[in-house]
Image 1: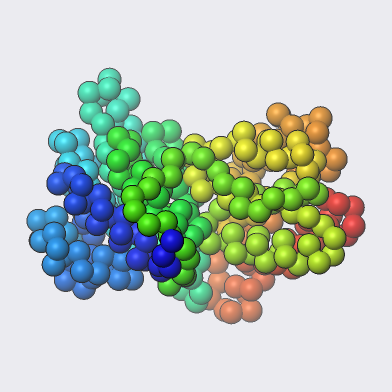
Image 2 (image 1 turned 90 degrees about the vertical axis):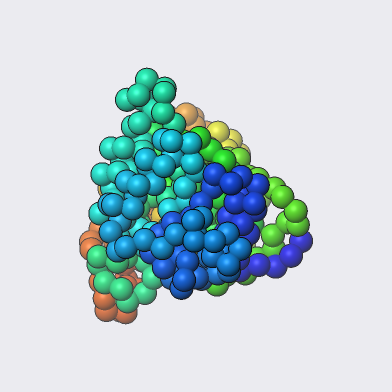
Length: 326
C-alpha cells in the first residue's frame, strides 16, 4: 500500500487508463497548461500531449457536447468540470444527450464518457457554488452516479468508470483533494454499484457517501464510547444503489440513520428510507432517521453554514433517537 492524496489517486487512475487505451482523453477548463484547477491533472499534458489533454473555453454546454459526440464515435472522454455548479449549464448534454442516447438510438450508440469534478459545499462560496448534485443526477435513467469518500475508492471507481460503456457522473469535492489515504499498489478496479461496510457494528446502521463520511466515522467513535455500536456503510455509488448491503445490515442492527450532505426533499436518504420500509420493515425496531443539509439555499455566513450542514452532534442525536436514548 502507498499513501496518496485524493487528487493523486484520481490522476493515477486517469494516467493508467490513458496509457492502456489511446481512445481515452481528458478535456476541461484549465486541465492542460494550468495542470487543473485543483492540480488533479498535474503533469498529464507533458506525458500525453495537447491532443489528449485539452484545455477548453469557459463554455460547459459547448465542450460537453463535443465530448458526447466524441464518445458516440468511439472515443472515451473524461470531462472535468471545475465545479458541478458550473455543469448546470451542461445539463442538457448530460441528461438529454448522453443519458438517453443508447435508448433513443435503439442500442446503436453508446456514450462511454465520464463527467467529473468538485461537488457540494466548500466553505464560503455562496448559494450558487455550494450545491450537492447526487440526487439530481441519480434521478436520471441512463446515468451512473459515483461519489467516493477516500483516495483508494476514488482510484478504483474512476478506472471502472472510464472503462464503462455508459455515461458516468463522478462527484468529488474540492475539500477532499488534499485528503490522504492508503491506495493499493498496482492496477485494481472497484465495481460500480457495490457499497462498502467501512465499520462493523451491532446496534444501528449509518448509511452515507462522499466527504460527509468523515462525520459518520467521527460520530461512530463518539457513540462507541457511550456503548452504542454503529455499522457504517459507504454507498460509493448512488445510481445504481446497493440496496442489498443496506437491507442486510438493517436486518442485523434493526435501526438506520442516513446521513447526506444535500437537501432533504427527493434525496438519496428518502430513497433509502423508502426501500427499507418496503423490504426490511419487519426487522426494524425504530423508524429510519435522516440527517441532511437544511432545506434552504446555502449561506455565505460561517455561522449559517454551520447551522445548515450535517454535523457530528446532529448525527449522534439522531442515532440516540433510534435507540430511544434521546
